[in-house]
Image (cartoon, rainbow over all chains, first blue to last red; front, top):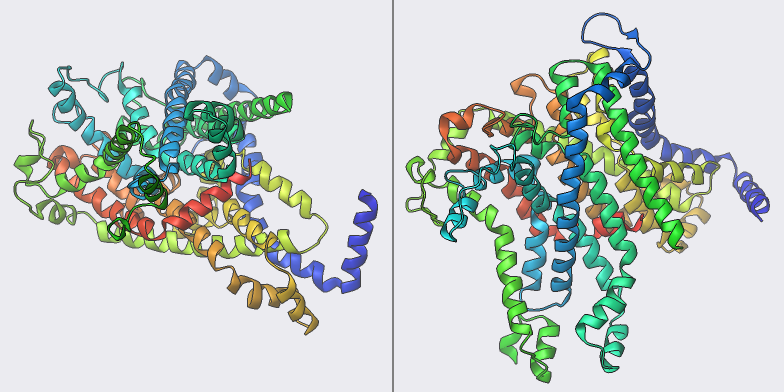
Length: 301
Length: 294
């Protein structure tokens, strides 16, 4: 069937004349040129840079895999990769579960649910600078809002951003607040797709709210849950702005992320070849996550 | 029941049928409290920005300032905030305009026109979603330094001119668009380009607003790339310039305290939040489209 369809299409195209082909390409070209330049060409150029010693002055020299060798022995690279996995371990469950609970609440269409929808989504539209600064202020050890309430409840001041023990958690809290809106909207859209009749039929059959949730809601939105988890893992592995703004990776690299390390090496120290090699390693990790997710889907199908 | 006109239809249904169960009340109150807590950081931000310096760094929780002053707002204009705002407007408006225009053209071609290479193009668009933009920052920095375009508007705009999300939103819309109007125009002898420009695009109002709001918001908030590619104070965008108010990055806050910093982020976030409240529906629509790809 495939070759026949193709032949028919070609016939149709030539029947209308060259004009049709030409106009389709004219429509696509302005997008395609920057698209291919800033993704595919940039990736190829990046892998070339990663195989050379490329500073700001002088000519680049070919060094083969030396940058990668160095990266595997660099304790800061290892630290940065361990940290982004830790970030993902806190942020992904946090965002996914809260976004689902909030979406279930708003989907009930109760009093003020329109206000709640706007409230849960609103942090998503502000810039990382706003998120970073506001949370630096809220998480301040001495005068921060969170610690003052903690003390009122009988707790102790926690040095959220200034201790090696807590800095990663502090940045994660701000990240959950910022990232939640996107997943929340995806869940809400999925919940609204579930036909009301199914839910009503279940309740007529005597199913409780919890039974409906486990046996109807969850199985129906399972693909959306998987999508949210995958997107959130990838987003968290790429964490940068919050780290840069809130702790600048510190204290003593306790909250440093991979992109933050690439930024430091590439922009601050101009070790461009090395920074490109670390980018490629992160790219590899993200590819692994994507492939693992695809395999998981195939296995279940 | 006219007094309840502001309640949602489901609430009315529950109240009128007497189906109100005891479980509903705590769930309702809990939801309300949590949604207020969720926007509390914004309230705290605005409140701090209006306080005089000696009321900011205190151990009392005061949600409303005792004295409302504009000191903090006056202070931040000692820095080139106006210039940063202008840079942000130039960069965000031009990259959004170009991005939406090119995106709508490609989205239309992918949904409507048959041409060799169409399915190949669509599959590389999907594949490109796996390539995070951050992977390409080092080669892009090198390239822009080499051609001498670093620290310019061009460098900040160009990489944002190809927006895959725009293509998705428009493709999705045009796939469901009835073909009769276009067919009529074609019989009259109009070319596909004219049909797109004169008939299809003017009717694509809803995806246009959805794509524009979403893309503008992401361009306006763009941080890493403008941070890397600008070297001088006068080329910084708002988010990058105002980042100088964070204690760990810049020195401004150590000098002035958190008051001016909160004034700066209030100026940066309030316009965006207002636009969001007005166009909320379109944000949601755009994001739901981007979720379809999974």
